[in-house]
Every structure is written in C-alpha cells, then in structure tokens.
Length: 353
Ligand code: GLY
View 1 (cartoon, rainbow, N blue to C red):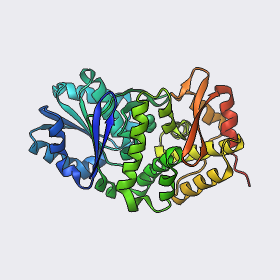
View 2 (spheres, rainbow, N blue to C red):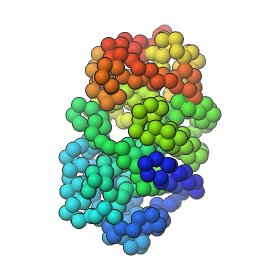
View 3 (cartoon, rainbow, N blue to C red):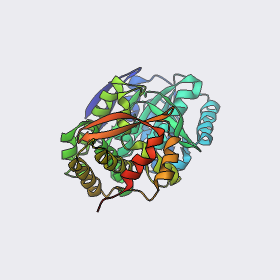
View 4 (cartoon, rainbow, N blue to C red):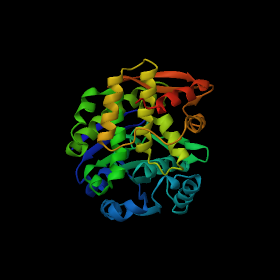
C-alpha cells in the first residue's frame, strides 16, 4: 500500500492499494465523523462495486444512501447536478456528512461539484474506478459539469477529504476504457518524466501500482505549486485544448483519453513545424500512442476544431495558453493569439509522407 499526501487549501491523503475497497468504510470513518454517507455512482459501477462499499460503510456506523445515474459523459449535465443536490437536501444531509464518489471521471466531477455546492461544501471522498480517474481526475480538486458550449464550463476547485485508489477495481474495465487512462499516463511522461515515459514501453498493466503512484506524485507536485491553475498547472492540459474540441465535436462519443491522445499528437506535429521540438520527440510520442492503440489524428477539420477550441475555458481574452513539448519529459507554456490557432491546428493535422 502507498500513501501520498497532498497539501493544498485542504491537506488529504491518497491511498493506493489492492482490495482496499472492502475497508474503505473504516478508512473514511477515521477521517469523517458524520452520520450519513451518500454514494454517488453510475449504473455500471453500481452493479460491480457499490455493495462492497456500502456494506463496509454500514459496518462503520454510517447510514448509507445512494444516487445512481446512467454511465457516460452525457450524464455530466446541469440536470443531473440539480437532481443530486435535491436528493441530498431531501435526505437531509448536513455539512458533517459525506459524499462518496464511486466511479470514473464523470462520477468524480459531478459528485465533487455537488459536494462543493451543497450547503456551500460538505465532506467529499473520491473512490476512482478507472485508470484515468486514478491518475488524473480524482486528484487536484477540479470538479464540474459540461454546458452546451463546451466541456467542464461550470465547476469549482474543491479538494476531496481523501482519495482511495483500489487498483484491483481496474480488472473489470473494458479495453477501450483502460486505454483511455493510458493516454493520460503517457501525457505525464511527456510533460514531466522521461524515465516514466520509457517505462511505458512495457505494458502499463504489468506495473500498475507504481505507475499510478508516479503519475499521482507528478500531479501532486504540480497542484501543490499551482492549485488554481494560474501557471504551471496548465502543463497538465497538454493535448487537452484540441482534445476537448474533438470531444465536443463528437458530441462526447469520443472518450476523453482518446481525444487527448489525438490532441497530443496534433499539437506535437505542429510543434515540430514551429521548430520548438525535434522530429524524434514526435516519432517517440506517435510510436507510444500507437503501441497502446490510441489515435494520432482526427477526422475533424481545422476550422471546426478551432471554433470548438475557442469556447474552451483555457481561452483568456484574445489568446489561448497552449502546451508544447520541447523533448520527452519537458513541455513549455506559450500564449497563442486566437487568430493563429487555426494555422497551428492545420499544420498539426497534416501528416507528411
Ligand atoms: N486534469 C488537469 C488538471 O487537473 O489540472
């Protein structure tokens, strides 16, 4: 078992281990005194893991209530958000009670935003069940919902009180959902750690606990330096501006990690053409993404991608902060005027023979 402490506006522990879902209730009880635990989950995860969690919460003295919504990004709406808020109010949760997010990124983002807003903030625990949510979305306090104009456009920075990562829960993921998380793992290698990147030449599944812990450490260090994303935290968005545009254009049928994989490849191709990084950096990234069967381009054109990018919240006035790799393990931030985005995306879409 590994423990990683995050010191931000709230200090909390991330516990990484195997079969720790069965003791999650006692883990939560050590930190949270309340009477009621509200499990928020989706209709796939519910059937797989909710009973194990619920049984242990009851054993540790909690009254357990549950809110289950349909799996998928299309649930991450204002409608589901208000429905969960009303559910918590009808069940008379108080500020000392706890919301427990059991699921992937959609569950964590929705449950976290609800916990941030209900009574101006109640206790909140993340139990991520996908690789992507373990290495990224459950850590660092970003919560939110999608609006018609774009992804995560309404939300809050709201740190959890604890994160419990049970690596054995990943055994039930489909290949598509597992690969989605691999894209975010590859991202950490490119932005911060060449040795991690090199280690991914062996299948991620062979070394899950260490790889997840390393990604969380990288994210912890970045978030502790820049909790509210005014600077260095933007590095974590490598591939995400174009990735979010792909998700939006696909009406969220393209999974987040797959869209980010294509976004990383497109931006890196453009970066080579801008003379910021060398071709071997691009070649290594493309080879790695392909080895995990992740996409390295998109069917959408530069015009549509640019329009979708401009509604992304990474825009600040008339520029967007883009993240460009210099070499594997090192990326830089650059302010790009809005009127140059289309040219950059166009050059990233073009594959040279
Ligand atoms: N997913 C990027 C971040 O948490 O900042």
